Length: 172
Image (cartoon, rainbow, N blue to C red):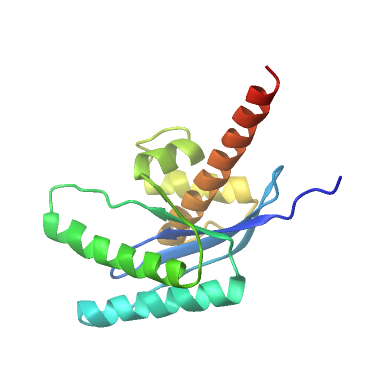
């Protein structure tokens, strides 16, 4: 029996000023860093920033051909306006994925941090450190790219847990 091909997961940490993204190959028994970077639309008006995010994500999807997009959910804190703008950036990312026919998985920030660091209230430096360690990177990625890679790792861990549960259920 041949091993199934790796699933390439595109993780995204959406932001209207900086959208981090990272790609990992989930090979069932290991994860490999493929590429990570940031889309920085600059100080344009919001509609133009959203267009840059959408076009940037579309290029990444076209170039790296992921099988799935994992995106961080909107975190609602005290500032409703910031959450709304973040939701717009998230929408641009999701639209690019759906347009390309990618399934979309969504994870909350606490769940992502729990999956990568083991602590749902971890800070950005802890996430960067663990992403670097888990993916065998020589340098820590920028914060937004690290958060995106953490989202992809979270999805890979969720898939692995689902496989284990399915295997355990089949043994009864």
